[in-house]
Length: 268
Image (cartoon, rainbow, N blue to C red; front, side, top):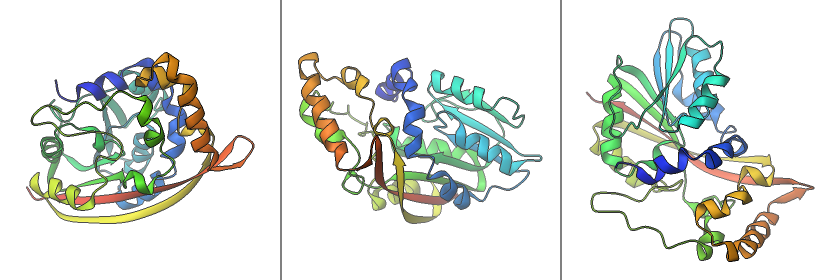
């Protein structure tokens, strides 16, 4: 099954329930991404990996009147959240869909957008090819993805590694997935060009966000991630120690974010 691990993760109620807190780390990026998209009234836009739908709703406001936005995600619980947020927004709708393998029966879009949603495809070349087919000839793809973890030191993956099962080796034909899977700029360029996109541009961005510890990690998810019960106290202590380096006040932390915004054109 395509994207089996991510499909399971994002459809688990525990993981999805933690998402609104995690949005504190991504909503600061939205204005920069929306500026790069430059959506205009009357355009048709799809939001890939739309999650809780906040960006979709913002896009819907920009393409009105006459435009439409379709949010696509493989997570049923996050799409429920998105639909609640979009209540009363008549030019936004949401579809549960794995873009990598499933067809969307709809007219071509002027722009495909993604805010940290395209790093989770286990066949990225095929996935970007599928995204290109969603976009009309001459249309655009614009997305944000994280730089490498070495530039995003807030991430807890490194300190949790000793407590987690060994990473699964991807089966033949599959690629590793995760928040930093597209951290290499040249690799992303090669993927986009290999999928039929051209005129690729990239801009690096840095931002600082103040948010609680829960915006980075929900300690209740240690077991869900595979930490053994006997190891949970030690893992919890390591996460708390890691986050203390970002503390700026009681219960408040300041995180430095490093990401890139890619834009490309469907060469038809």
